[in-house]
Image 1 (tube, rainbow, N blue to C red):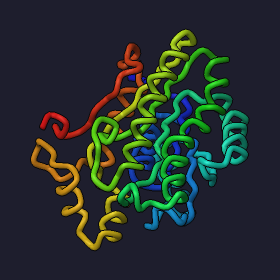
Image 2 (tube, helix red, strand yellow):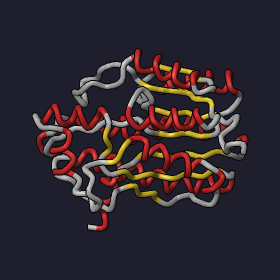
Image 3 (cartoon, helix red, strand yellow):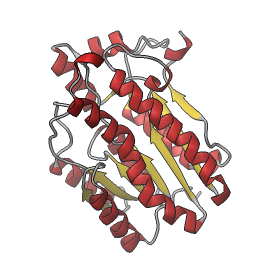
Image 4 (tube, rainbow, N blue to C red):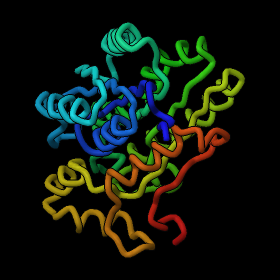
Length: 268
């Protein structure tokens, strides 16, 4: 049976590792061609290791091994010129963009009153403004084609306050509001927009946060999450499966609503 994603083109940010990489590979295995956008270098904030150029290259190789195609683009989601160039290159090569997975994001701890302005700006600019900048360049193309799906990777932090993560929660609450507003604006053009809200995910970000705190990833996950199901975190592949569903024809009437993947955390 043909896949919903045969011939489709997915633009994935933060694609070098973690949830972005798992989703890019899952989509590729279903027949989608991948535009993998990632900064692929170290930044002052968050202070732990981000993706690297070799991660993007290995992603490219895995996508090709899965029988699909990949366009790799190094760029910062805060850099509109890099975004514009990537979107132009994607449309030039593949002719269209069907799916946007706004996944790029960072997380690091800090008491609100002790955060530097640079730290606050980095969190909001990458997690929230970056998603808007990417969307601003892709949405006109989707509107013209009257088709598309945008999935914004938010967090359970969109629904609760979090100790030492006020800046992170603010960015994710904002991303949820952006998603709902886009859903309203774009529905007349046949474009769906959904925010997804994972609990803690077993990714290199988890490892980086733990190292900064001098703890193990499991200790960080158990202290910050408290999932109802007996797991400290979910896997990046669990997020990828949610994206596959939401981007597919099976979810053709799902738009504007948050999609929670929280192992029961918010039920507590």
